[in-house]
Length: 427
Image (cartoon, rainbow, N blue to C red; front, side, top):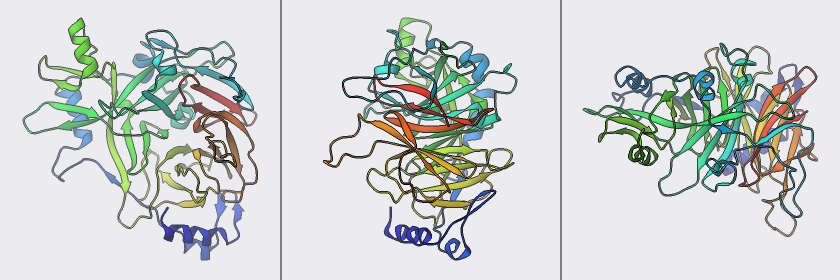
């Protein structure tokens, strides 16, 4: 964090906070001192006359005749992967038990063909969002199906495939439920002069995701928010012969040799539609995670939070959304200090804010990576926190809120190989 912003936030923290029905209200003297966070929308890369990503998506559909896939009818309808049971949560000597308030969990597929989801060191899960975020419940037109989207990033330096999302059926969450799921590769559509419409892999860490209507917001730490079109998931080829399957795994986009579109062996791609990047004059911000808040009345908003390993100077920043799921203005509507380090996810529930965080560093400075994560509650928003509210998984990541008849729940996930689970806890 830059020195100027730290000084400004210390000034904010020194002024008393007032709680209102809509959340946190900061006196005018503090509001004047708030750093400004601005995001500007971009619809294309390169020159202003280049093809927009939206136009490239349309070209892939109409000119190249790639079929559109539904998240439920197609992706889940043909899903080959099956979740595994979460196990006893004690993943080795001295490791921690299951999260507090746990009421549902699953692990990724452990069968031989798919076990890299559970134990591989290439793809790491990071963010989670559900159809409650997107639609207030089930997916429209799906017959009541509820869906979770989980983001992963590719850690390899060579042959990096960017980011993907898992589409998971969470309609049934009983003790014996083992959801089916499949992966969709995130891609950037493109059009070069004289070439077919095409797409390429992203370079995203995908540290957090938020599903707002048709749009999937993906946090990119240094560059803002990338917005993908869930209504334009496209079907590509995985190859019908052994040679074609090898080609499919090695290639992303249009292959001139056989005139076919591949996506590193995936059956589906989700294309980028637009990007919100930091605008000129914006204060520096790490876009480490993003969540959707629909608990502030009729309006929906995005909440971006920062990750710092040792500093407690991170902030959370809110941008309001319109009815179509777009930012209503460049400038953020509110900002507040996190007051703890190692924040991996943040969600607002009314005037409360919940954070998932990696375990506190031991006094001797030893690695805390294998320690149980912590759930923090900040109430009122921006106030000092004195102790964790409960325990989470080992290696906790993003959070997503789901209301319930009595209280609510948080969805979370764990990232470490052999310890990867998706889980829901009661508040």
